[in-house]
Amino acid sequence: MARNKAKKERRPRAAPPKGFRDWFGEDVLRRTEMLEKIREVYHLHGFEPLETPAVETVEALGKFLPDVDRPNEGVFAWQEEDGDWLALRYDLTAPLARVYAQFRNELPTPYRRYAMGPVWRNEKPGPGRFRQFWQCDADTVGAPSVAADAEIAAMLAEALEAVGIARGDYLIRINNRKVLNGVLEAAGLLDPDDPDAHAEARGIVLRAIDKLDRLGGEGVRALLGEGRRDESGDFTRGAGLSDEQADLVMAFTAARRRSGGETLARLGELVGRSGTGREGVAELETIATLLEGQGYGSDRILIDPSVVRGLGYYTGPVYEAELTFEITDEKGRPRQFGSVAGGGRYDDLVRRFTGQRVPATGASVGVDRLLAALGAVSGERPAATGPVVVTVMDRDRIGDYMKMVDELRRAGIRAEMYLGNPRNFGNQMKYADRRGAPIAVIQGSDEKARGVVQLKDLVLGAKIAEKASLEEWKARPAQREVLRADLVPEVRRMLAEGAGDGEG
Image (tube, one colour):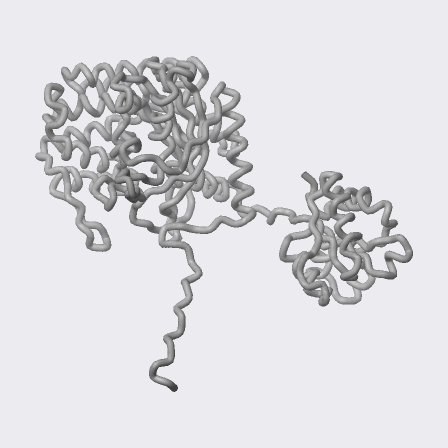
């Protein structure tokens, strides 16, 4: 072997980057189906669609992610040649603030919009935690009344029921950041005259409470103090609160009582003299009254002080949709499914662009988590029906086969012609099986001369082959010969008989 022989070229690894995944046909179709049901709910409430670019300026996005201590502050960012920093959007709310500030003279006020699409976060990936995921948002900009917050919460409940989450399997939990601020003020962590004081400690407190369902009370208490070391040995620095301060914060998270009225009374005790805190309690009381008037009882929507939401831009009511049924985790242990949606009021987000406070509120559905929840509720769904496959028996008659496909499509029947090497007919049948095709259309030179086609029912054939002997298969062939002129009505009839749902 020659010493100077060139090194073998290294081939790229056929895998997505860490924290990303590929989505194939059936998953994409299920997501589209689910989003359409949610879209119908939003549309019914008068919301309009909006699409924004996947890329925004870092300046426009702002620094509001919960894990601000991560590299690049949680976003995928890069610098342009002109010096500007751009980033992939980390949610759909920050771009909305930019859009409203830019087009506020042309948009109606209030402006009600919904948006659906992928977002990206530069966070540590883990089981079920990806760096790219879909969100589905609905927001109202320009409405100061907490009636807008009540509407968002009610709409979340309607959306969950529309996609198939039954009543009793979910709860919309509501709290108010003003109440938390009142508690922090009572604990000496928030000075109305110096809002920047203790900002770092408040941020740690906020993120700690937001992890209550995952870490439990003991884990949160550790983060309120010196810090917490997880199972891997990684240490997360805490807020450094005194025992007295930590006790007050933990009392806030545990303030939920048997009824909404009792919970509100307890929160009133905890906020003490704080004007901000008392205002937050009053807003929660109004929201509860409005929702009860529409028939949303505590079995669907309730006041829960443990909800704070991790994003830093919330200024008032916050809400979280939680699924309450049990699933089994990767280690076989039972656990509740948890949160699939959340949001809140963010009255200061647009002010970053305009200098004027603009009230806004909204919620975001975690699309991928909700899809997983629907799978857990409904169990394994049957595979989607593929297209009718027109096989190719004679290479010189491609035009005939394409005409068959065209006729089927014009009739609203999903169909395709086999485009691989037609030499081996068995490979064509394997392809049709892999595509989930309900029917294969076959016409060789003999069938052409007689003006007929063979229609092979692949669904029935698979069932017979699975349960019957070879003799039974020969006695009951799942194949019929029909006139070429009757191709479309016969395929339609076979589909109606159960060969699959290939129409639409």
